[in-house]
Picture 1: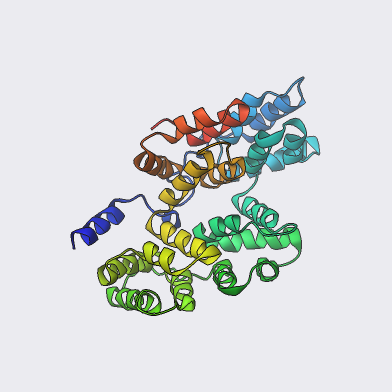
Picture 2: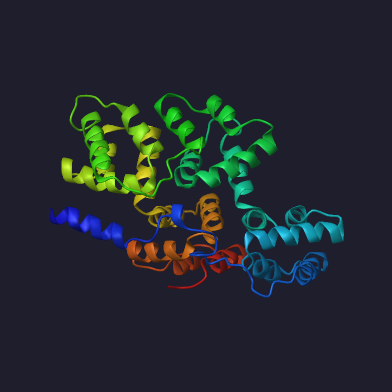
Amino acid sequence: MADLWEDLQSIANSAPVSFASAPGERGTIKAKSDFNVSEDVAALRKAIEGIGTTEKTLIDILTHRSSSQKQAISRAYEETTKRIFVNDLKGDTRGDFEKLLVALARTPALNDAKWLIKAMKGAGTDTNVLIEILASRTNKQIKELSAAYSEITKKTLIQNLKTEVSGDFGKAILLLAEGARDESTNVNADKAREDAKALYQAGEKRLGTDESKFIEILCKRSIPHLRQTILEYKNISGKTLQKSIEKEMSGKLEDLLVAIVKCVMSTPAYFAEKLYKSMKGAGTDEKTLTRVMVSRGELDMLDIRAEFKKLYQCSLYKEISSDVSGNYGDCLKMICGGED
């Protein structure tokens, strides 16, 4: 019972899940209060059109404006120059720094759509990207990225996913991609207990696993309901739901269901772990580092920083400083926003 109490306490005290965060609330990238679009366009033009690019100006503006302010800049830039801002960024910068700036200039929905398109391009599918995006986004974010996806590909996300994923993993991914998770905030403890029992009986309690029960509950129920279900599960089975999934499942389905459980418990902790792994060991996974820093910069980077420090006893800022350098590193440190 003491363990359950500790779990209750840690969930009660944990950083808010991203599902509850609105842009600007817990992010490091915020709207500029005295925003002047024509001044920004003039500064960006000078930085791009001058002899040699002034990277500091690009970094400063793109990490200190909200997404809607950056869209206003892009529109005004095109009106003034008859050129597309992201194309000029691509023409003027290179490598990981270029990819980072372009992502900062785009809308979150367009970024998610582009990352999903890339994950499904060519031979083989990058299921890690599918899992990261679809397990962590709200219904609203999924609807927005789906609209952006359809606009680019002229096909729906669901249509394309059906050709890429199959089996139980495919069923779960398609359910998430519908963006139809229950959004009620009321938690019925009895129903959560029923779901916890159903999960226990579908896995630990029987020979073989009823994967469909896990998929149905974890992909459809509301986040507050699932938080309660996770606690009830520990009470019934004596072990965490994550441990049971890891014991009962394997492969991509296991990865997806574990990601959902982690996001339910604390999305900032889930992304702190992603960032840590992207920089751990030999070589840096710049794609993941860029994707996470950009997608969470305006949402919950303050909470990710706090969780990173708690989990790894060092600041995210210091980890970035020791792992990446140059303009790319400087830009990531700006998104990170501080050392604590």
